[in-house]
Length: 175
Ligand code: 4NP
Image (cartoon, rainbow, N blue to C red; front, top):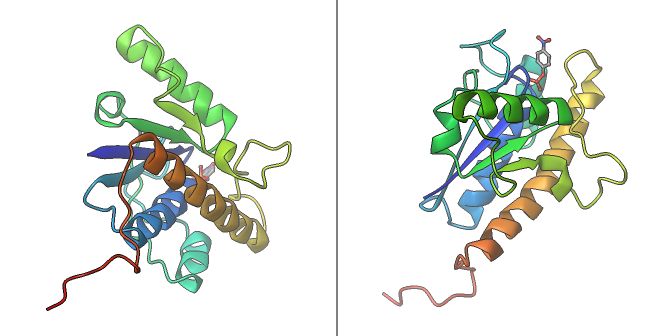
């Protein structure tokens, strides 16, 4: 199994939509028996809550129902997840610090990522911007960013782990 954990601050806006979109992409490529994902927040403010209503609305408009309930990142996650993917630099730095506290060493580069590094349209920004105090359009932008980043990240995993992707052109069962 390849285990992926998306992390933001509150785990009610960016990482739940990153998780929801990525799950769909994985399912489309029929890789859900190989790749699993979840999300968490570095902060505990919203533990137990569903994703923010504004984020759920954008998700639903794109055919995705978000059912994740916010949870805080835990030390156990450093052992359970092969890929820990931060939404912004501050999340990334906090995860690094916590991993040092937990294990006395930082997570290796191949385990900790900044999601937007995968966005082909990132320009000079390597951040998935925090939409919490912004207008509705900020939530739509987050959706677009995590969709583009998700496609590229999935391709990265497929290549790195040499995964076989079944396409609709593959010969199926004749009977
Ligand atoms: P998220 O957004 O990190 O993308 O879930 C936020 C959610 C809540 C808060 C900040 C950011 N907050 O300050 O409560």
